Amino acid sequence: MAHEHSGGTHHEHKAHAPAQVACYVITSSDTRDPRSDQSGQLICQLLEGAGHRLAGKEIVKDDPEQLRAALEAARARGAQAVLISGGTGLGRRDVTVETLQPLLEKRLDGFGELFRMLSFQEIGTAAMMSRALAGTAKGMVVFALPGSPAAARLALERLILPELGHCVREMTR
Image 1 (tube, helix red, strand yellow):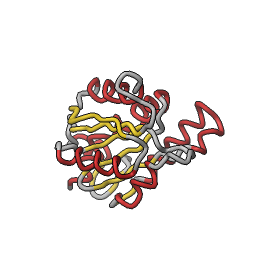
Image 2 (tube, one colour; image 1 turned 180 degrees about the horizontal axis):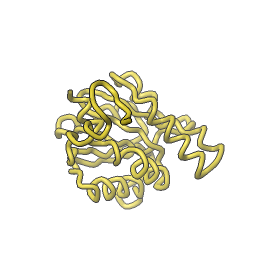
Image 3 (cartoon, rainbow, N blue to C red; image 1 turned 90 degrees about the vertical axis):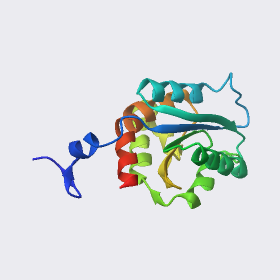
Image 4 (cartoon, one colour; image 1 turned 135 degrees about the vertical axis):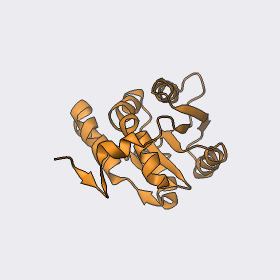
């Protein structure tokens, strides 16, 4: 028997999900520039390789004001999903989580939980220091990922890409 949620199977819901999502990629870092932003580049490549459209990409400092401005820029460019790389650790300059939490209308707690579980399988107990999170804000699905390329690849390949269209569909119903 198929597992059902709110009137339909998971497969039925995904069948009606958009195949292409307008995505905006933000790197939150005090040290990265366009040449050294490996995670941001990888995220863009994986999104476009999966058929999604890049609405924009930018690098901002680990600064709440710059991060909020980047989210507004994403909204203005028609982004349906925003992927933020960096600023989710325990360092004193890591402010992505604290900046996003009050902006989230709905949290997707399962994203962070699953990311840490998958990360634990790859890196062990250090996974508990990840504060990856996701939710909806201002009509967009927002994902905050650790800044390493390995974390970005894990999050996109195992969690985000398989459900991105489905997330956007559910958010807009």
